[in-house]
Length: 75
View 1 (cartoon, rainbow, N blue to C red):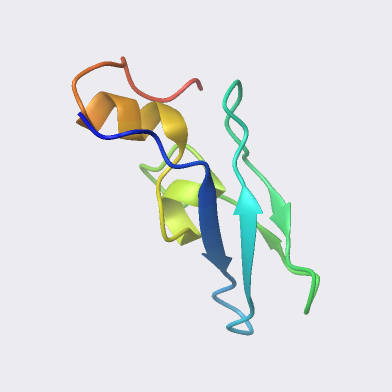
View 2: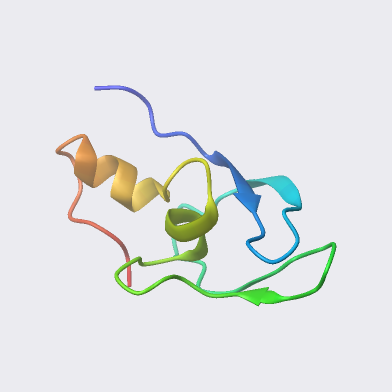
């Protein structure tokens, strides 16, 4: 199994601005304010957090679930 990645690049669907961030390992992030246009991102229907919806890498709990060593998102 590969290691869990903690860096994900969020891309704002409103303005296209991208920012690489460190994901929390102990909680899901349900909201994120774009540092460029200030729109507040929320997860898409069926996703547990903004990283799963708008990130280049899903959140750590989902990564662990996909590797067979976790139970899914922390929500």
